[in-house]
Every structure is written in C-alpha cells, then in structure tokens.
Amino acid sequence: MSDPVARAAELLKEHRDSIDRLDAILVYTLAERFKHTQSVGRLKAAHDLPPSDPAREARQIERLEKLADEARLDPEFAKKFLTFIISEVIRHHEKLQK
Image 1 (cartoon, helix red, strand yellow):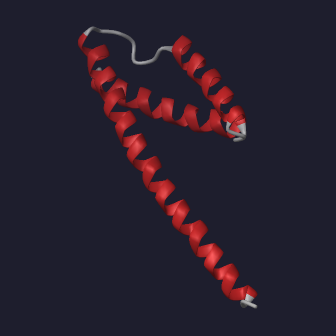
Image 2 (cartoon, one colour; image 1 turned 120 degrees about the vertical axis):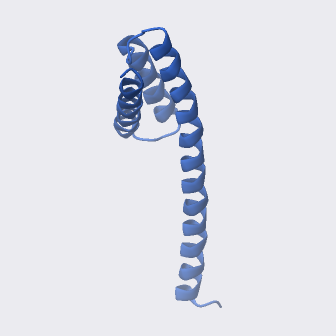
C-alpha cells in the first residue's frame, strides 16, 4: 500500500505542472491576441476610426459568455476577464491615435 501523503504530494505536483503549462499558454495566447489588436489599432489610427467599437465589444462579451457557459466556466468571470482585455486594447488604441 502506498503512502497517502506521498501520493497526495505527487498529485499536487501533477496539478501544479499542468497549471504552469496552462499559464504559459495563456500568456503566449494573450501576446498573440495583442499583436493583432495592435495592428487593428494602427489601422484605426491611420484611417481616423474611433479606438473603440461598442457594438463589437458587446457581441464579443456575449460570445465569450456563451463559450464560458459551454466550457463550464463562470460566465461572469469570463465577462470580467474580457472586459479587462477590451479596456487594455482601447487604451492602446487611444495611445496610437495621439
């Protein structure tokens, strides 16, 4: 029979290793997303378009809430997360317009 504390420590390490890999995926995915949003911001600035698009932002939030629900992730958390990302994108777009 194996030691339950040692087994728990092993499982804890496996979970933490998975969390670390997922954190890396999140960071690289966000970096890729922001590369695209920076391109959008430069395009908007070059054509004197507003830095934000409230209709698209509302559609994106609705879409993400649906995806979160399907993934069994708290839709309110997903909404807060995307709202934060959108606010950062708009902030970057506003800087490009100056």
